[in-house]
Length: 188
Image 1 (cartoon, one colour):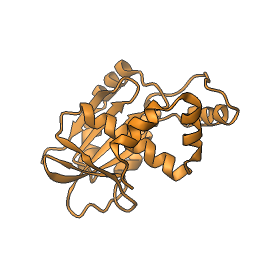
Image 2 (cartoon, one colour):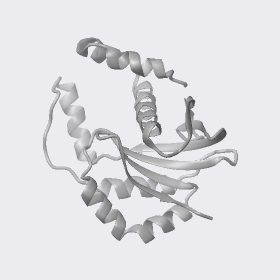
Image 3 (cartoon, one colour):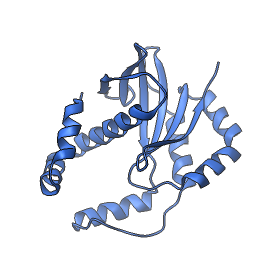
């Protein structure tokens, strides 16, 4: 599915109640695609890559989540939201109860490591084009300083896992502040 950038701009301008109704009208699969595209498009605006926003489109397995062109060449991105599973459960319960807010403790490093390891162990169909991993925070607010410190300590292990994976690079993106937390690149 290919969302037009105007779709996101239109959705952003909707008043609160119409926005909520539009969201609720989407199927769970459409919501997942929307979230992936939303986060990828925001990532693409700030990342130091020449991503052509007009070429961003969602793909279906066994292809990765997103296909786009970088400097005119096809590339793929596999996306995953980093979220403590208990936090995600509490968010879902709050949403079903019509609550906008929720509180409680949540883990930072465990969900990131779990998600990274899961994605690095999978196979994807890319027809030989470069594949990149984008892990992003959208529901959970990341503790950026703490994550950078932990990633620094685990850098050798992270790079080794990346070399053994199908990915050329891995990015950690904070959707709350629209900032890159970290980047790991495999250099052959």
